[in-house]
Image (cartoon, rainbow, N blue to C red; front, side, top):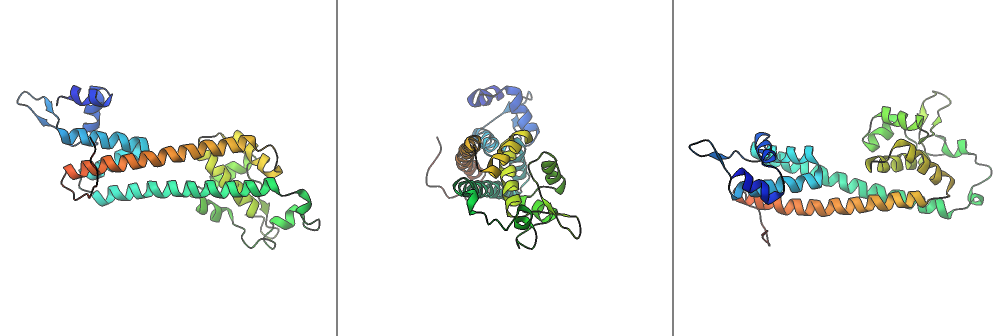
Length: 253
């Protein structure tokens, strides 16, 4: 195939095909005596795999997977894929945890709170053995402490302070708010919107925007999971053409 043939079959420009080869996303093409590139079924399968990986994991990750393969780093490529699946699983678990927290908040009444336990008591280190420092919470969420301080400045987090040290302490409600902020941030929501949603969760009222945000994120997770399945099939087909022993029960057209 000529570059234009390969490009036309995938709905991209001829220059994009050349760029993908230059960047290592496609294997090097052979050349005719006059210097024209010649692409084969292997290149078409590589392009299928790369474009499906982009849809599933993003441009940067898709590129890392293909360049790792082409330098002989199959296990490196698989490690990148495994990290992507791990991140998707974490997002699903976070979504489930936020839903559980929201359901709990929207069904409990204010009367259920003991009058003798004020907000500071309920959130302090003595009352909650599960409190986290800013470093511990940042590690839990795989973000930086600076990110948590930015969320606090935006009104998303309202941690208590240890009376002895003055350090921030994050209790169960803070951790829930941080998990929710992390989820929505990954969904592309601005800090101002997240702050509004978190306030709604805290007051257990007007959760319509929260429900819409969670439903939208669920749709994104489903679409990404399906894209990963498609990418796995196409990458497996490409690997089989490269001679790797990939076991398959079906064949792509």
